[in-house]
Length: 313
Image (cartoon, rainbow, N blue to C red; front, side):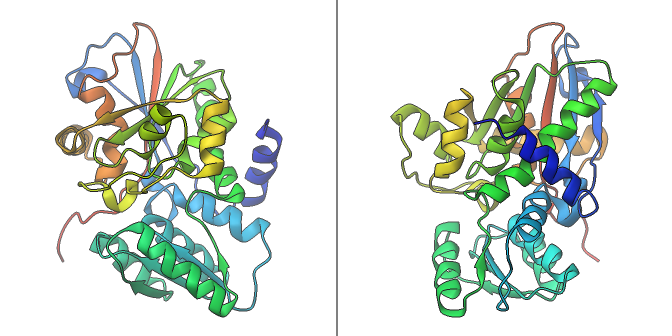
């Protein structure tokens, strides 16, 4: 299915509600890699509410009818912060359900918006169950973090921006590295590029719903743990997301928690980019050696979130 016209139209509708985030070129040698290719970082940690999730939230609030009871969302933290921020700015009631593993930096960000925050359950799946029960009881509109058409269209605007920004550099991007939880971001990016560009999913090895689905040839449940579980801890890939990813022949790989922590540290040490573990996961594919770009190619790693504590005040 070709969604590019829908993505283009949506971008025009929500452009005032989101930020055009920087595409930042860095030297591969800064990360101990050979300077044989060009490396770009798409800095979505500078997006509203601190992650790419602001795009999907804006899309849902623009395209869907909002009931008097407002909206609700289940989240590891970033999606909830995005929905809470967008809803509050529009005067819409919002209830955000997060699991106990959510980073305090994210739950504080949600609470600061004035949205109702409910912390309950061990994992994202538990928060989702609580959210759906709330929606059934109150009539609130559930805004799904990834397995929702409008959410996917919103995240796809990242792909549109990357293409435009790369063309401003007179380049075509050869590979795009995207961290994967439930699949909203990577399905959106691949929906924009189709099969013309290699889009590669990067998952923690202990939260690898996409890899498990690709191996099994169908969506399966996985166990979830590790340092990025609050943002990449979906137990299964979304059904709409999986359909798009299969259609566009997206591939995926895994990295370790050590790889992620190392990439996170290198981003800070070399460029003072403060990414959360999930935000650094895409770069970990390079710094760990799991991906070795061909000489002369242009690679973009999406740094998708930065909701992590920097200092204590």
